[in-house]
Length: 501
Image (cartoon, rainbow, N blue to C red; front, side, top):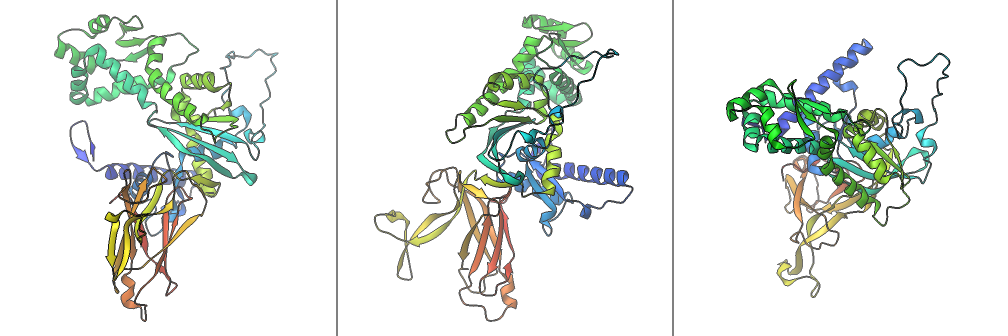
């Protein structure tokens, strides 16, 4: 559930589906207007990008929200692709030409060039010319909420191989906004800021929008102050609540880098603005350093920096200063659109990434023959005169295991009773590789695999013990499943559910 500023709640799935429906309708209308042809939803293959660090439940959440928005459906799932943001960006950046990259230092050019000035020819060489088969590069996707880091290796024919499972965390540009909110708490008091946020929500939004524009304008190459406009509702509410002027609170705070402007502006000097970036920059630096220090990730020559937050010149300079001596930092000029354009490329060829690394260990609980001395006695169960060990973790895939595109795990299951109309199998996951039982520490139920066996009543001569062969595919951006009735050779309807655990 998501809570609005007025305290009302609404299911997150409903909010996301409404947002996706708006984008769908807007895109179809725009396509129809541009092409002078009525474009229908069925004419489009849709791609939704998600952070690479998202786990299976979050990806299924986005897919379900898209279904609810009328984008594709469970009957036609292939009309919608879930793309990982770093992969989409990686596909696009390799297609760029060198003149489309951000230079290491901003160039100053006169507004009106001299008549005798000869314009510099644009460098039309492709980025991919220097990144041939075997070349390794890191991709750092800095968005609003999260930072994703992956390492890819180029293969022949333009294919990509993931060398390091996606990592990162909540180190996006929101962290800078949170630091600004802390600053407001320190200057005006946390109780007042909390009251203003709830009593004047429109004013609060205006204030954060004003700061957002100043945050984007922050640059280490200029020393001019950045003015954040305080809404009239803020100034008026502070006077009514505190009985004093906003200006007096800023003076009382006593920071020479934070001042009051007579035009109703909170004036932040460059050092004050930079301090707001520092905690987030430190987390990003540490996350990148952890990947570079990983023993089996070596010989990385390039870093691709993408995402909305990567537009910040403060972030660009910090990462170039910190890691520029180790690898070449490549930043596209349209850095905030890199993932969007890469998603289109991915939609045209979803097989471009040939290998990924499993982020978790997945499996199911099964019965195995009890082995004295190997299995604990508390796991012993006797059935039909046989001794069995219960709760054994049967692994489909292991954490940090490289999984190729299309790689699958085959398992066969037999319904407990003849004529059973459905079979539900619990799926478990853990971030450990050496677990033995589903009851071990760190193992949790993550979803269910449901096999629809209701067609049995319409089929004749089915064996008493019906064998259902399931195929779990882990090499794609989502975990997929299919099932086959061995006795009839027909497909069995099956679903995998990570939301209703």
